[in-house]
Length: 256
Ligand code: 13P
Image 1 (tube, rainbow, N blue to C red):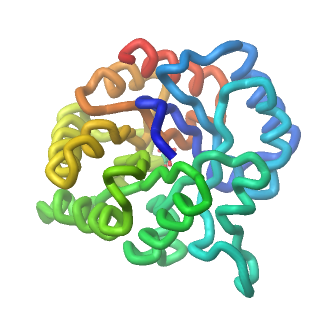
Image 2 (tube, helix red, strand yellow; image 1 turned 30 degrees about the horizontal axis):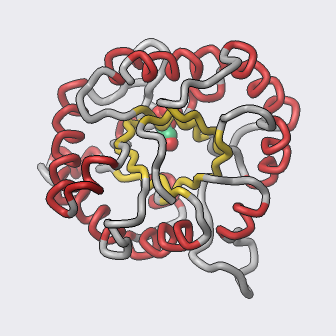
């Protein structure tokens, strides 16, 4: 699946929501943004049980339905898992893979995350690969090697001439803390990621959207969206408030 959209604002709802809450949130977003600009995609990623409700709520809108993870298997005796073809079947188009909370709490390894990205592509879903370093890794000067390790485990399984994904850089220490990485740090890492990917395959590296995630909100979105090689955001808590999420979308659109 080719990435037709170069910039994205994606809401990761994590383990939150209810049918009433979801409806109010989506209606709030759609009321303030009746039409999206086709240069910037918007997606929301609820927990699995609400995907079908969201598919209904998003009908007639160009907002994209996303999921928060998937199984590395397409089907079989894997109790509790959800497979890519099933996500596709209920209207999902995009899936987060390797979020730091899954790496930390579910023990997802780079190897498993590679298999999940492969499973997403095989099911016709757009994977959003999440990468990021811990505070200790940053302090030890290991940021670049951690990120390239996370990338390499996945890139080696892709046909970079034909296949696409979105990459979200989310420094773990900036997630859910209310303090985003500084614009200098973001610029440094995104510039590095861009040149690393171009070094792997020029066209792939140039076209892959690079999102920032970690305490991005309506107040800091203008300055983050304006950074070179930042192609939008992966948003946690601010994605649960319609006005904040819309403000972030508008900030990214202003830089498109
Ligand atoms: P916060 O925006 O709440 O820091 O979460 C970021 C994130 O983890 C998005 O995937």
